[in-house]
Image 1: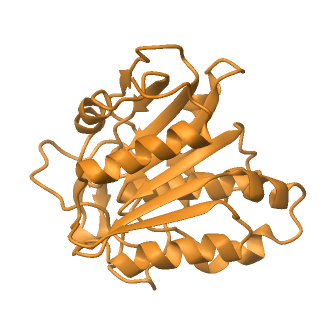
Image 2: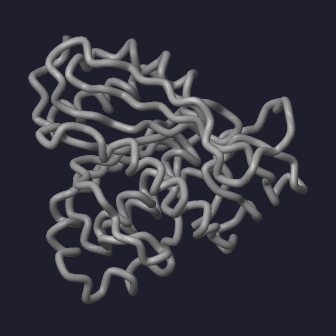
Length: 256
């Protein structure tokens, strides 16, 4: 499944060199630091908007790292540049996955987590295209490597995807077959997917199919939450779900 993320607004400036990531915003924990989560924005957005929202959540034990995707030409928009974690060429399940772009972004996310203290639990999450990149990172963790063959360097404890989809879904089953340790990693990694039934950008069935595909590939702890009236945005009810889920799965000391 390959699909675009959030709608694109006006983008200033010209395209940067490929894979030149933008500014990273960090929300420091207000309490005891127990977990670090890299949170990824949607297409055309930046790390700042999500860092502002995440800072308001009652999760004092989490450090949030909110990077900004590279400016890159988007094939779907005739080469018009936008902040994006990978290229998108079509709005369909038959679109071509940008493995190079996905690998570069997943590796960048892992590099942000790799410097955290060894006792800190690590997670990935995101919205729309950011959710897709987070789920791709989760599959790289379970495989033990990226699509390009390089080793995946960090141990993930949670993954969250809001209004997103699973990239490279068609080939995931075969890529996990016979991989040493993959079954245990898939079994132990909890994943939360949330999707609005009114989503007119990333269709609801993309999220639903993604959860089903993950389960069929051995991910045993996959929660899929749907919201009847929700479009391609987030609401307090959804963020409350995220807060409760993370507190439970990461064993956090509780909300503030």
